[in-house]
Image (cartoon, rainbow over all chains, first blue to last red; front, side):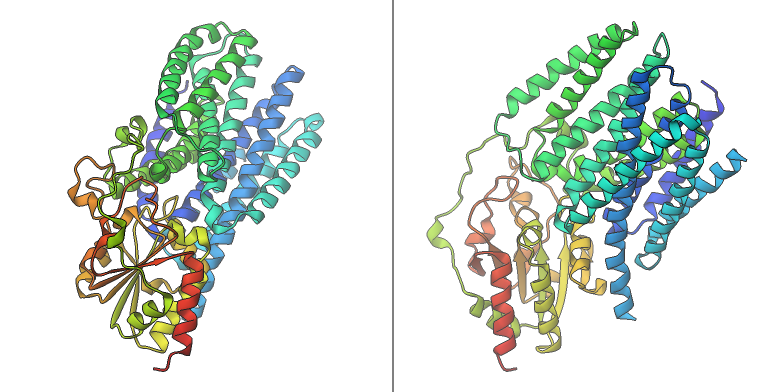
Length: 95
Length: 447
């Protein structure tokens, strides 16, 4: 394991800590579904590994993995958009 | 070039989360994240060997269509189930990557086994959460499940050594064992603790991504995964704080220890009223605080509630506020979403700390579908499961209107002394119907 990756991990922890505390409690549900959607970034892992796949079993496993993470990505973003639209509309009527 | 695009992608994600500090900018934040993900997907597909490109694109499209259909069908009160299920899929995706990595290499390393373990636990735990939240599975036998999960944990530890040999059948067995463990582990956790569990699983799906990032040496996955993991941890912290429960207690103690509910009083002590009484009381009040709980969402009463608040404010000049407990819904911030759905202005919505000092000067507390979050037993009864949980202090209001379907206890399985209080008027029935009747009465009454 390369050592700089640990540095990245620690720095990301700090960024995450400050970024998340900054989120208003009112939006905790959308926050969850957005983070849920972007956890689908793991799809890149599957796409990267599939290049090195040397038998049919791993290829199929990785394709299934791609399938599930894209459900995660599209479903998550769609739900968040649905929620955030409601908050957005509400602010408009108050103006 | 690729590292430059990586910088762009994670910057977009971080900006998208920091945009969520205000409701105004949050919608754009989501678009930032979508753009980031779009770039990532295109990048991933371009770098793919051409023979796989078509299959990968097809899986993405198929998954995308299913995901969008699924989320389209989800109503806002079903949101927690949906989020739990999606979390699970994220975990499953990581778990599958872990399995295929171990197959590709002759000798799996500990990191890959750990990915399989966390991925499968996140997946099956989320599925268990999904079943619990949607009410498909009702559990009574907590003790058996506890002991089963202990046995599974031991088997899992033994399984690590077998799987370390790298034989595919052992690795599959290890994955199945881990999945069973996650399922049996989450299932007996009390329903009232669901917001905590969802937050934990949300964080776990992020940590899975981080682990995969370490395994394939991709710094982008590490950054994003950690961001999500941090979000899950902080939300878990906020939720445990709001319920004043220790995290270990949530995980290791089943909430329904005694299934027998001890009723504190005679049922005859209860004063029931009609919607007409409620309307009369509220139009003559100066200040009304509405306390919604999950029952409100379950009966779909948020629109009627919005109408009621509007009428009271505009026609009768009543000071109306909404008091929201952090765990009022089934996930963090759930109630805010539900009230936003009904177009209730955010200035009327107050959190527990802001509203608790105001109950003293309140004429009427209108409690709809909330029970445990208002239960004064949390202050007095030491052996109750909700002891020391911060509650909305509705008992200080001059009168209490309690809308409830029946006198059955709430999620935590506790009786509520408020039912028998002299100043309480119970409105028994469906929350939506009753609120509707109140609205009709409010409309017809002259000022």
